[in-house]
Image (cartoon, rainbow, N blue to C red; front, side, top):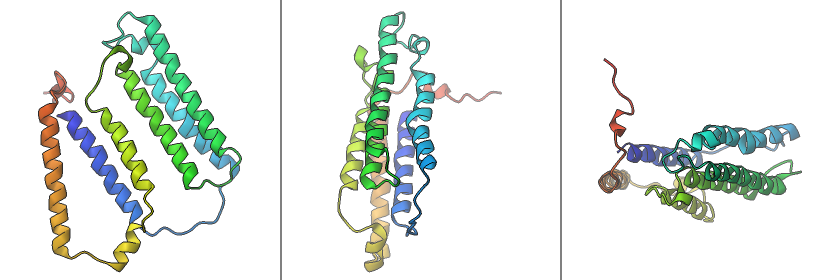
Length: 210
């Protein structure tokens, strides 16, 4: 049940923030960022944060503690090196696309996003033991989310705020749409909680100390 709540909080919370961004009117800035600003930002996104994630998840000693790699040091070493190789390839792809550009356009941002998101998706499959035959039922949703995002971003339609200024929906339609969305969330959450057995002892994740 915790995975269902965690996933819903992330998905619907992110959807709300995205709607807020796309329905706002943002001032146009023509000031180009300094070269070091782009370099530091890319270093943070492409190296520092991923390496911190790798350090906490993909060191050989940590992998050997997992249920699917107990006492299998060669396989643990292979996965550890493989994840670093994936990170290296992601850096090469992004830097080849962005190096030397003072400003990034929408295609550059999409390249950065897809490369980083794709890397984390592959890492999630590796850390849960996909190569050892383990499979978690919620992981296909990561790929589905990525595909849905790409499909929506490639749609050539007017921004939310422009369409809203031209045609406002009546309050009863807003209420109907809101009610349908809430009902859909409830139904999906119920289905997810019934088809997924949960984690043994998961209810003790946040124990109450007397």
